Length: 103
Image 1 (cartoon, one colour):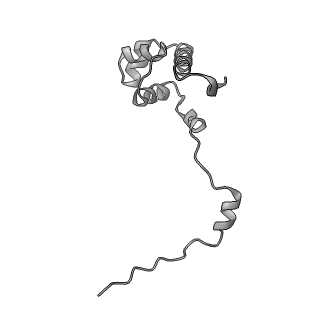
Image 2 (cartoon, one colour; image 1 turned 120 degrees about the vertical axis):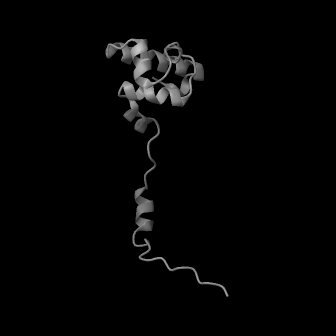
Image 3 (cartoon, one colour; image 1 turned 120 degrees about the horizontal axis):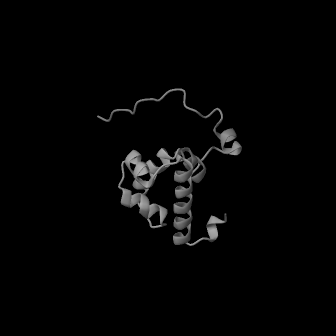
């Protein structure tokens, strides 16, 4: 799917559709998912209808559906490039000197 070309509303709707598919695949009712995630049944229904919800409501749903690890792909950690690594090599401090006291 080309997420970049979707409007925000269309992306949210697609996420809701996929969450519903995962819920059904795990044979959970909306009520079961809501209880396990610690959110309201209304919120689960809103998500699945493609209505915007806060990330604090989405995270427990992803956790219950065992999708939370996918956030690593969504927002990957920034690594050090090989060039930066070469520049830093040998420049790590061996000790820290305390600042001089002013009289």
